Length: 79
Image (cartoon, rainbow, N blue to C red; front, side):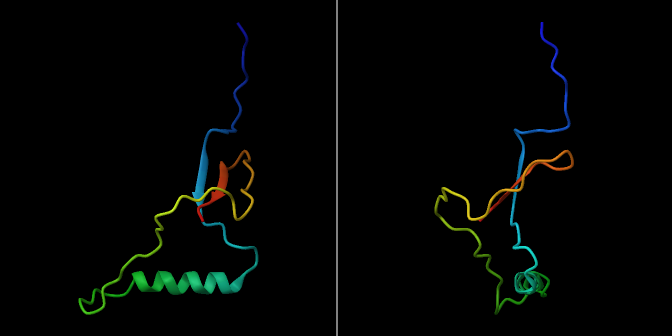
């Protein structure tokens, strides 16, 4: 029987999240504005509606996924 050496890499796992553009202050400022909306107190006259889901299937990558390392799994952009 062949003995396989165990490594810390896990190629079957990946993290899906929004990978911000590198060194883009405008992106960070816009995300802070969005997060501020969720911290507002409840107002029945102005309900908060989340509109970040689209009923489409995306086939392809906008940005290249970040490679897997010993410290984290492969990271893919959720967009």
